Image (cartoon, rainbow, N blue to C red; front, top):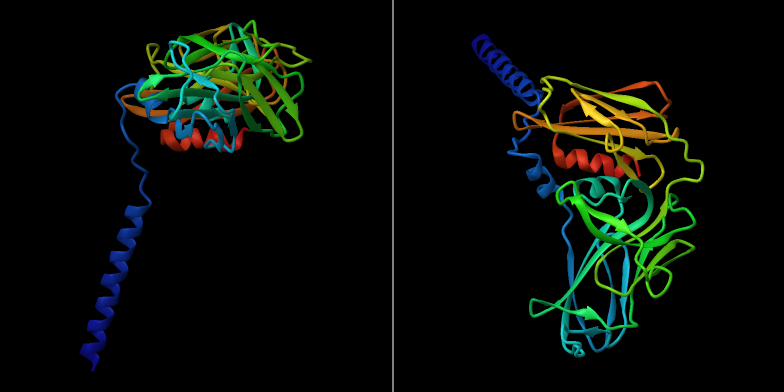
Length: 318
């Protein structure tokens, strides 16, 4: 009997040691992926369109991935020759309504050197049998974007033109000549309605804030567990709390050796965001602030998963 009790005791000790070893393995530092370039990060996190088939004669309505409702009128499409389109058309729609999606899709709300406050960015395409089709003159489609508390009055229609960098800033938003005619924006209740006379990138925007008061300050980066060299490419942004708006750090200031100097951001609640690749590892960090001239703000960058980092920007600061 004593021998059996001894054997059981030994077995319990072995199992306990095994469980303890397993727990120690589970508590090790997470292993993240490696990436060849920052372009790879942007391609991986870029939003993809939703495709819907509509009958060109009857038109129709459908919802995008964000809850935006699209409305197309009957007989509103023509081909490149101007002939009316019949049969099915394929509509592609993408909505950029969150800060992380805007940043990692390269769809920043910027007009030249002006920061915009967005009520919602969308991109639309239409094809039939692989060839583009177009809205007829005098026709528009309607996109009803859900309105959040961050949408302010005074929204105008902006159309997307090619931006300075087709990875990090693909679009430069401009007010087209028709922005007070067939292409327009109507804000009502819980909806921002975008009317566009073309299948294109569209944005409901206003120029800045009424109490704009730009400050001159520094944002200093510190990388935990790695070294930030002078040649390391770093992306930095200011997220405007409570608004669909981001501003690239240093675009009107400067960047050198881990320090952004910024002269364009007003003294309101913001979050500074920075990320980079070091030896193929993705490092990112966020810091809250209310910028004041002459101050220095520290952002600590740690190794993180890029997808989780984007989701953090989407959920915490919108």
